[in-house]
Image 1: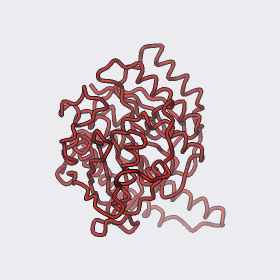
Image 2: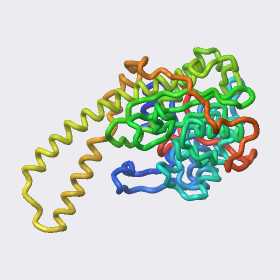
Image 3: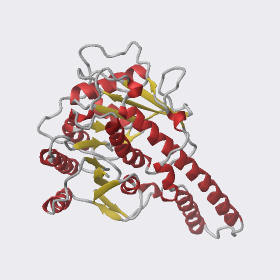
Image 4: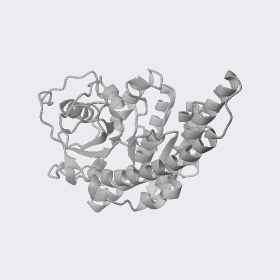
Amino acid sequence: MATFVMQSLGCEVSAINTVNFSNHTAYKQFKGRKTPAEEITELYQGLKQSRLNDFDVMLSGYISTAEAVEAVGKIGRDLKFEAVAPPNHRVVLDPVMGDNGSLYVGEDVVPAYKNVIIQADMILPNQYEAELLSGVKITDVPSIVEAITVLHKTYFIPHVMITSLRLDSETGKVTSESQTLTVVGSTARKDQTPRLFKITIPALPLFFSGTGDMFAALLIPRFRAAITSASLTQTQRWQSPDSVPPTSLPLAHAATLVLASMQVVLRKTLDARDVEVAELEKREAQRKEPGDEEEAARMAKDRELARTKAAEVRVVRNVGDLREPGEVERFRAEELDATGENQVEGELQSEAGEAKPDELVVLKSEGAVHATSPE
């Protein structure tokens, strides 16, 4: 998905697949394999020898092993060293490790990411991944502020975006009961203190596979365009002056457009899915009852697979909404009220650990390493 989305917004993309699967894992079955670290390195060397590594931005995807994280990190470092300044090469990392309190990578992948994100220009963790990297348990607004401050100050990452929080707007608590999703972003000041904004969107009643990829892929060209509009392309790491307030940051403008596009596409997907499921139910009602347990199990599996397919995000047929999102005003950023007892002041206390400065940077998008150069 990420390659198509970026290309649709005018990016030239070279992709190195970090997995080669027949389908995404929401189907709970697939064929294929994870790309070994040495193959990732070999494919990049192929691009480099043909002088095809002159990219503005690298975005890395799901990376299943610590060795592969290190390999992608070395690619990011090489691209930064090779870049002609200014502007330099940028690295955007979506540290895909888990969700909802559970890892879906090996435990050794977590320290591998900690070692490479110090060179990232932006990271896009979800709530659980932000907790893993910062060592801060996120339960409310003050702990969100603390986690992002740790990420700025420990790893010197200028741009941080936590991509999915169930934040109750009245209590300021993170709760699974919230009917909305909140994105919280920050671009650090020179002293690494955060400038925090939030955007709240409705939580749609369906699981969509690939939305993290979609978010990251849309954000790359939108952020670069916002940086260009703000005349910041020649600045180090695309940081705005300290005088720029949170809601006026290029990152906030970019996130507004990203979420406006995503809401339209996902709502259209939901509508199309409902129509498709209604047709499935009509056909299923006309089938005879299963003759035995084996047939019943097969029919149940067929129903589940058909509904998973019906929920595939309709990206291609709604490409116009990626380029020209509607109702942008509904998704304008608000400044995050960062008051609270746990507000970080002075020395930070966390379990983040120390990053190793000789390691490298990575970027994510599910299943691929992407280097992009908007037209």
